[in-house]
Length: 169
Image (cartoon, rainbow, N blue to C red):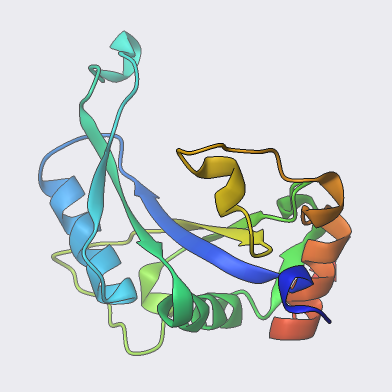
């Protein structure tokens, strides 16, 4: 396969939604940093929801973006927790996919800490081919042709070949 046609993992985003600021958010950040071995960033609400007591720009979650070999290592351990099985509906038309993990203690080496509690997380994986910088660059951005985009079927096949994932219909 030519180098420019090779599909690769652009990034893995691990997200924990807490819904409120304060002590719970700090614990969620600690969990993410333990699991990913990388510093987490707070996510802010985009709008106010009075019924939930959420104001605009209020910290309501935390996330970590992994790229390169740390992303691949984390993805392997996260897929092991899911028994290397993903539902077909978790893949989008661009080949990207997402799945959830119920409890951080499922990761190898993690023990339950009563002070922290139980936190689940969402894992989103973005797949792409080299050359996507063309669409995002400041000087003369251009659209990426359809034949160079990753399709849903190609994303599923990539995960089957690379990570031995079973995609369940």
